[in-house]
Length: 179
Image (cartoon, rainbow, N blue to C red; front, side, top):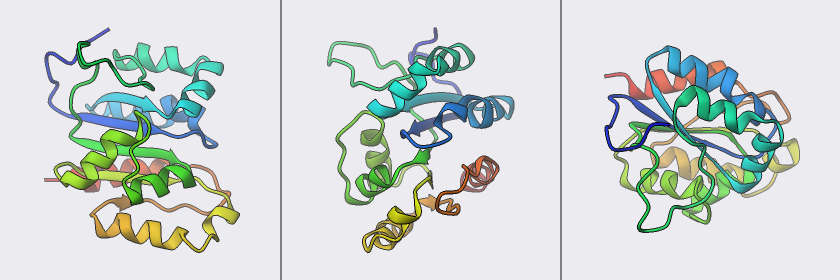
């Protein structure tokens, strides 16, 4: 397992929520990014970490990336397990995760560094919501997306109740990180 002591040149931080498609993240997003020359580090919300562990995907993600899948904060005396990302992707993002990002509610390890990245505006952030029609119809939904867009976040919107648009997420990463 690698450590964060020697930073790679292009690092993508992937934050995953417990939404449909999360167990496909290795095959559909991590491996294509690795093939494109990115170093990928993955952090999951607590519920997503449980889904990934149940499917055995947490081990496979760590094997292909060379970094542990994070879901809990480290203690102050522990070394940082991931290098700093040059781009953040939040996919799939639940309605709760999108709301937290829009409101700056950094209450778990997956959301906290992305909230910081949005606030600092130092690296691009790509968010792909995977929500139900009910969540997309909530009166606050459009406002959350508007706040993220106003902060410079690249929002990759799919159809409510639709599949994760992995290809669109990959294209958004390319566009967001193009020189």
